[in-house]
Image 1 (cartoon, protein in one colour):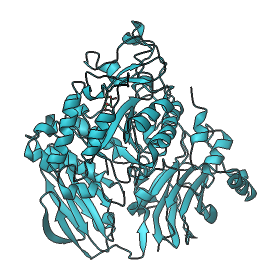
Image 2 (cartoon, protein in one colour):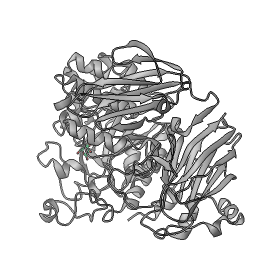
Image 3 (tube, helix red, strand yellow):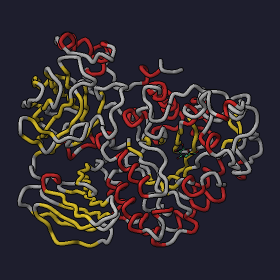
Image 4 (cartoon, helix red, strand yellow):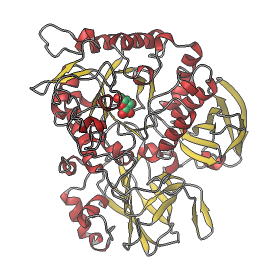
Length: 625
Ligand code: GAL
């Protein structure tokens, strides 16, 4: 168990001085604390840190793009297939469009040797046979990938064993030998494995799976039959009370530290815990991308499930850290060349969600219509937009509209998406887009590369079954001198979400744009607020302002519960605004944040009680230039 290391690894925690300031200001004494959390920890977490507490590297400033063999070949994979797809990426032009990570998935590891080193499966990777390297070497492989101008990725697991060992027992590429020799996962070998993967073999990216801490419980057949050692699971799928999220987070934290040491600032860490163990809540503090769901299967419902796992998590994504609803299924099943509508919808949604784009199709023999979908320049430009804002979703039955604020004044992307089998109409309005009432916006269909008629007030689109349209708009911002928080989610980080390790009802997300965690609208005493961020009290949100803004205004709301909530605004750790709002009521707050690099929004509930702290909103929250 490594839970102890988590406190040291947690970035952005308040220093002694910050706590002392907090105490001196008297705030320490009156702040209430959720019963379930240790008083000291809660105070520490809510103290302004003035830092941006995400996994900070230079890597993945836009969502990673590339290719991975898993969806194409599963365990039936070898070096030739991977090299062939890498060459295809270059030859068909996709590499030039940004698809540059060529990743090896499960199956490459043959054995863990007595000295703890890893031996490569050289029947799978013939080029790994290198004189003087009894374990084999991936240098010939990574040299080849790099010679194509691409980057190379590898796979491991946080536990002792990988997923294929558990779920693909007939794979030709399983580890061999004794139980200990077959423990090819990186548990207890974080430093050594990352040194080998990044330092010796020259990889640029690692995907780290989690079956080793999930699927080797005492009661499973492969353990009972003695083929694997037992690992009392840290992850029981779908069951937070019986999981140990802190232990899982700590394992990724240790790996992240080793990756930074051996891979440097450009190394990418992909967390693959399938949305379990609360990983979508802490993934941005521990890696560059984190899975939000189980594996995508090649059918429509599975894709919808994966969309729903990520689409409301707008506030967790930003440059360097991305929600990952899994690799692309384009080319397979409901998304194959006979289902181009569905393939385009899949691609549209991944682009608007700022999702990683990892192709999972055998590119050595790909039909042109699929390559055209994967290679649509304008769609890719939306996915890769430099501002790094994930889109904000709005739902109307089977119709879904997602609005993404792009870099540049008044630039937006919007997806109109029909989840269902019957035709629907979907509408986005000027409030959702943040455009000035009465102003016109230009409209471009990025799939067809056509400019459409300019629009005013709202845009409605008729959609066939499973259809998505993706537009790029240029409009007039509603306020030339201000930006709503809704329009800059890529610069917002939920440092403390107020609910600790507690799970939430299905469909709730601890922090969201324009709605409360449970999806309800911001309404207080009969007044609706269209914009803002919704979360729980006992929370702290960091916003990167880089000295660009002068003033902050919001209407703080307490949406449920009893008692009151104190709303505090800090600019570079200095308290610059404060108000108290009673349950069910709204207030006003205004603060001078001139030249602040990071400002923080803290909300503290006055009383303990109920299952969770009250839901609150920083409604109509706006930054003035
Ligand atoms: C799963 C993972 C897949 C793939 C597979 C390999 O856990 O989600 O993307 O890596 O393991 O066995």
